[in-house]
Amino acid sequence: MTTTFVNPRDVHAPVGPYSHTALVPAGTELVFIAGQVSRLGDDGVYGKLGAGLGIPEGQKAARWCALNIIAHLKSACGGDLDRVKRAVKIGGFVNGAPDFPDSPTVMNGCSDLMVEIFGEAGKHARFAISVASSRSSTRTGTLWPC
Image (cartoon, rainbow, N blue to C red; front, side, top):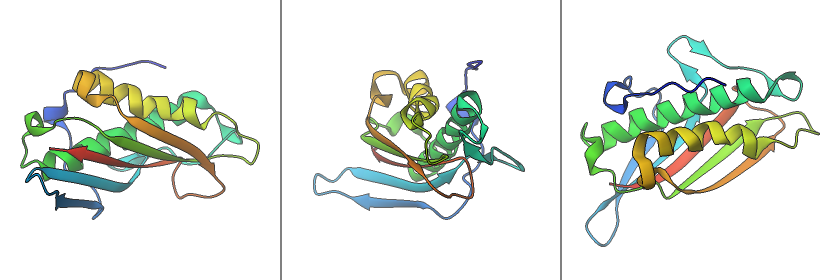
């Protein structure tokens, strides 16, 4: 898989109504972003990992989910990604065949991009599971303080 540097300040506008911001007691903001899919504009990665799609396509899909997460994060932080303190948790649901064992490897596409962009602050707890059905190849949700 080819890794390309992504400038998060140039990320596209958020897609979908799946970003919510809540205040936590310390007075800082905690951003939860859910339901991000492997689609950028009119292009997307669709299909089932282990049944037509391989790990490189799955990692591309996970990277695209990450870019959608960053778009919502940028919006939630008032356009200022410098407000981001760190990633807390990322959950990945990979559309996989019943015997597909490599969901964590697929989700490395998302996790690696977060560290590439945010450095140490992009490191996070994570889960990755295969699901029997999804409209896209991967779906992600995240938790970020900013």
